[in-house]
Amino acid sequence: MFSLVGVPPDEARGETEARGPARSPGSGRGTSHGRQAVGGEGGAGDDTDGVALPPVTVTLIWIVVALVAIGLYLSWTAGRLDRLHSRIDASRAALDAQLLRRASVTQELATSGVLDPAASIVLYEAAHAARQAEEEQREVAESELSAALRAVFGEVAQVEAVREVPGGEDAAEELAQAVRRVPMARRFHNDSVRAARALRRHRKVRWFRLAGHAPFPLAFEMDDEPPTALADRPGT
Amino acid sequence: MKIGIVCPYSWDVPGGVQFHIRDLAEHLIRLGHEVSVLAPADDETPLPPYVVSAGRAVPVPYNGSVARLNFGFLSAARVRRWLHDGTFDVIHIHEPASPSLGLLSCWAAQGPIVATFHTSNPRSRAMIAAYPILQPALEKISARIAVSEYARRTLVEHLGGDAVVIPNGVDVGFFDKAEPKAEWQGNTIGFIGRIDEPRKGLPVLMAAFPKIVAACPDVRLLVAGRGDEEEAVASLPKEMRSRVEFLGMVSDEDKARLLRSIDVYVAPNTGGESFGIILVEAMSAGAPVLASDLDAFAQVLDQGAAGELFANEDADELAAAAVGLLGDPERRAELRERGSAHVRRFDWSTVGADILSVYETVTHGAAAVAADERSGFRSRFGLARD
Image (cartoon, rainbow over all chains, first blue to last red):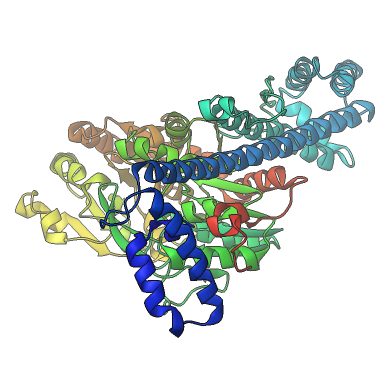
């Protein structure tokens, strides 16, 4: 469309007439259509000189080009945002799974009779509260479970005691894995939340409402420090 | 699990990142996972069965040195094909911010992406300028791994967000079981690294060497690594040059045997290190370590508990510490013991389990990796071929 308008009218007419017979019927129809369009434009402006288009048309073309470019950019940004939102959903699901796993293993250990009664009650209470917590209370309840786990498994001796009973090796390993993966999953989740927030705060996203009705992403803040006896890794 | 690993640097050029990827891939294969590594390599280089070539890397001046990088249409097409054929559950990209295969695959893939950041550079103008270009690619990464607390800090400062720290792995057993070589034993100091790269710090060690010889006359310095040997000893007095032995490039086996034989391993690196795998290898082999107090080294050595530290580029302090260690067998035995206990956390059994935990966390409930159809303008207009 642009290329047809872009051809200077005189030259275009001359060329189509000269080449017309040599062309196939299909392309001939196309060019004659083009000639009409160009002729109409040329009649409104100056069709004698080499400079063809009136400034208004040139400006219009540029506006159209700019609008298309902006449209593409916005659609690409919306795609980015969409991808970030689905990343948040996935990372949140992973975090939920790890938290649930940690609470289940804790509850299992608490009811197994391996630990002394006081430790069992503390762990059971905390794990139960974490699993039952409403969404607003969740971060607090999970932090309390972390604190309870640290209190009970702060000493290597306690972990060894769990490992010695039949089946305790697996339980201790599963708990160690769970307490290590919760901080990992939380870090990944909060990282995706940060990336989405950074993009959503941008002018282009706010002005054009590219985020739609998606809720503003919230980070999951909790105390996830694992008990030292279960996870002695540097730095993580 | 089907795992795709992207290596940004030429497979045929030895380097820390490449070795890390090789060991990781082999460790994961031993555990029964399906692993494919995409790496730049010449088409005629023999490759292990798990490596797929992404074409030849082009030497380009980048970041102060000549780096061999992959970019352009051909590489991008190979990345897409690899992603398409592989149907990976997760892809693990190393150095996603370098303008090479890492960035290309980040751009071309969608799904669970794990990325490891190895370098820790001070903030550069190029990075700031490239930020808007990098961000859309980097925000696809579901999980970021930094190799040290120091690398993590760089990452957070440069790109924002957060990362988990998982150190580089070492096959501790390989170094532990190496046989010492008699000719390398007896009051020897070891150094491994490029001779002609000042960053590796051999000049600092050479400046300290006369003082070490003055205190312990029978000391020998064993240097393993490529470079101009005559230029390296040019600063030493003539009579001391015979005390320095150059071993050239050594094989992995010889490296392990060398580390088993020496009395002190010196790492005088002056900067640009983000991890310091060689220190872990030395500790695995039971060599007492004396290293400059770079952030990364201090962290690997547990703030000086697992090895001694000296002020960076201070030859006098290096000499004093080395003389102290050579004259004190008890202190060396103590460091050996602490080092061996400390390196357990860098063994592949631990590091591999952590990396697998990351994979499992990000793949939980997510779809497999696929080529990203949205990233091309052709596909936007329905013109893409596939």
